[in-house]
Length: 120
Image (cartoon, rainbow, N blue to C red):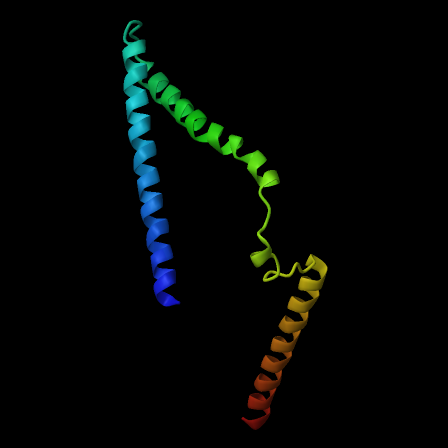
């Protein structure tokens, strides 16, 4: 089990690093493209504009596929093999159970503390 967890963490870290490097490269290339367009009208504020425009382009490039995947949530369903493993617990039931466990732990802690105080 530990090996699978390690491999999962490795894949997640490498995926995050690759994603960040791709976005940084894309942003730099788009900034250069906007610089070429803005070079015609030189002014002291043009570097800000090309950075802003490249960030807007990156947000569009990353956001449109994410928005396009939203309908997939309604089309794809849980497979029957995983649906029976995760029983749905209502929030109120979960909160009551968690509160009860917390109260039991607190009572046990207070009993131990009072027994130490009485013995000492």
